[in-house]
Image (cartoon, rainbow, N blue to C red; front, side, top):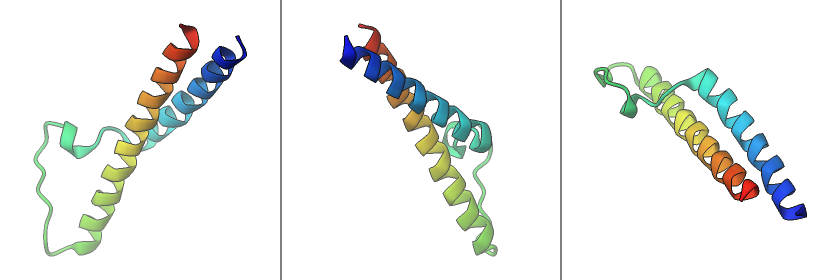
Length: 75
């Protein structure tokens, strides 16, 4: 019983943190149906887009881990 409550609590924490990241960063550009043009003349913009995409993927991964932990805690 203690492990299930712990997993549920950790899962909710992961889900909350991932949701906050998703709220800020949104979906990664790889999952959107927009053009993926990156101007090579502006390396600063390319660098910022790269890190925003990485941040988005991290948020999705944390949400996924949270959902798995919640399911495991409920079973």
